[in-house]
Image (cartoon, rainbow, N blue to C red; front, side, top):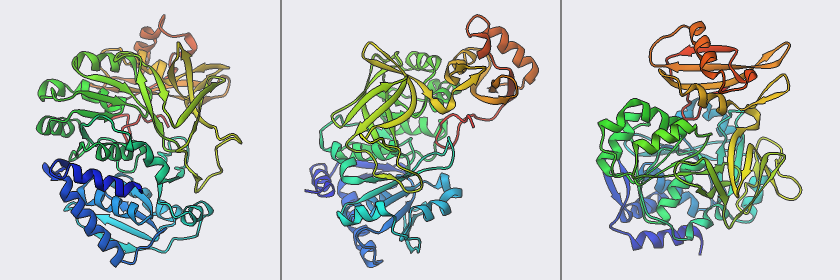
Length: 447
């Protein structure tokens, strides 16, 4: 039985249960099944065929989810795209070799447009020859141009057939993000309920949690920091939350400590995943610990020279616009620096973010955590800047609640960091801003 037939069988089991809350209206699994059948008919009428590459530009609306399920049934290659990345869509259309584009508007109505981008990439042809559905995801491009990642969907979806906990879950991670994709299919497989926020501002997210009694919030450390510093915890009833998962970037110790204090009855779980491999099962040492075990039945992990390597059954087939990153034994170098401690991993950050000051390594997250302790600091991002003598120096961009001169802030930071950080780790350059230090995916901007 293929995954979509199995999933539709699950929908029958929970026919009257809410599947998606969109614009404050619940849509039951029976309704989602009807919408799926409608989309199946529309796509066939538009002459969409097996193996076609089809973009779906939307968010987590009932129509968008039904369309994804119909494309999965037709064994198409899915290219989910969020509206937030619209300025990159033209390039994504070309790289994804689109045959069709589906645009779903604010009323949850869709249009199907034929495209002419097919070039028959060998990896896509490989999927078509074995008659499997595929998935194309684009990396955030934080370390250069976005990479186009191609998955075979049966392998990626197989893990969701194992029964897990059922939650009312807010879709915080985006429609075109591996975490958002994982959240959607995990929830549908376990007959949970997806709750869609109008936008991803702190006030909108908190209002939706309060109104629809959301139990699970999957988010990023940067958003969690904004939530805590906004005071929204005291302005909204967030008592329905049972679990907050965090990933996509390094969690500052201060943020995790504040979060545990603000949500004493909530479990905290660090997650780990990559677009190239999927989301691994994880277990935090405790709610207050940044040490985590990752892996699961489909994954093997090892640490080589302080870098995390992973081998997975659900690994991508490869990049559509870059060479294969796998070694001859199938291991993928994540690029993450880690420390192995007592059977757990402590994730230090991306190797590409490490600052080299005269031969000494500086992890941005370590410096950010110390600066974040200072009064008036809302957020901080640290990166390396080129220097003629030292190779690189540490530069900090600090978001403050009130305007402060960069010169005086640099002196304050130097005083605060003295004794807490090695001298070469203390920022030599400081810029003060009042705007947020995160991108549309709520990941810290360092480049």
